[in-house]
Length: 124
Image (tube, rainbow, N blue to C red; front, side, top):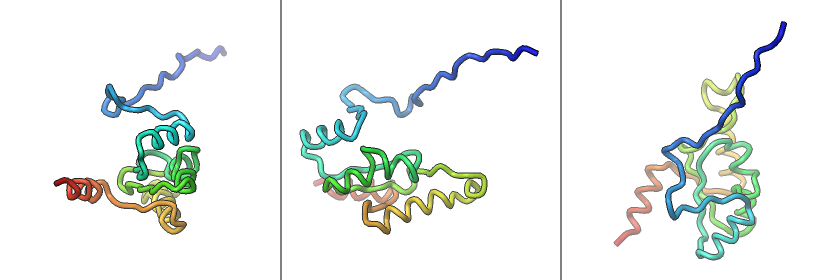
């Protein structure tokens, strides 16, 4: 029996998070390093998917940039790990990935609300 051929999966970025004019799109750790150096940035905020893979281990991730002397902040409620069948119900993989970053001192963590309040408190 012949198998039906399906169209290739077309991936798109969610329109709510598309880059806007003037936004920077970073493609590598070296690219992020150059951008930070050029703009005088010392603090990086991390959020997103794969708190147990990409967030800590990519060349633009927490571990690499903490090693370069940057202050990394992970927004706990804005990230999730790759979960498995026995962790997805309670997000225990996510909690463990966050805990590992906290315990090894590579990143400070906070919630999005606390971060936004802290940013607002710095305005005069």
